Each structure stands twice: as structure tokens, then as C-alpha cells.
Length: 124
Image (tube, rainbow, N blue to C red):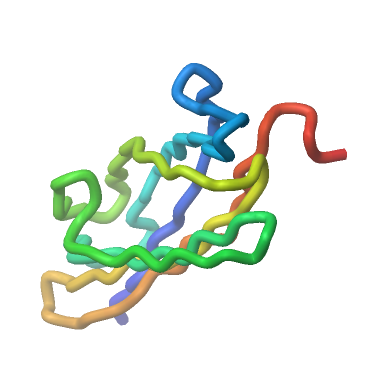
């Protein structure tokens, strides 16, 4: 029985040199590792993000691929990329999902667990 399974891990970083707190502009990067933990090769087709700042302002982002790529991942393979976002507050969060098509034509989603964007030392 084919297994359609991907795991997603995230690392975040605040970029003080690109941020301007006086203008409520806080820039973060997030580095994502997507690993095919299933038994079937699949191609990442698109993504959907919900980005929420500390004032509960929500941005929705959707599009094809990730950073210009639509990687085809064999079982056991992984793809890593780094992207970024701007918030109007020093903390926020992101959550989303990737959409895949397996080599057998099956379409499925992989959740991106919610993660926090925060200036260093702003959370306890």
C-alpha cells in the first residue's frame, strides 16, 4: 500500500539589519526542510500560508512551488529552502500546507506545523 507522507521542519531567524522597529517593520527568515517519509515519489506543486502578527492581522499567501522550484522528491529525499516575511509587530506566527502530486497521480497535502516568529528574548 503506498504511503504519501512528508515531514516539514522549520528554523526561524530575525533580521535586525533589514528591520526598522520605528516604522513597525520586522523582517524574519524561515528555513524549511521538506522530507519525503512516504513510499512514493511526489512533486511539490504549490503552497498556502497563513501569517498572523501580534495584532491578529492575517496575511494569506498562496502560489506555485517554493522559491521558484517544484521539487520532485523520491522516498527518503529532502529539499531545503529559505524564504522570508515581514511583520508589523515583533512577534507573530505562520502555519500552512504544501500540495503534492505523487508519481501515481494521487494528490495530497502535507501540513506545515505552526511556528513562531519572534525577536530574540521577547518570549518567555
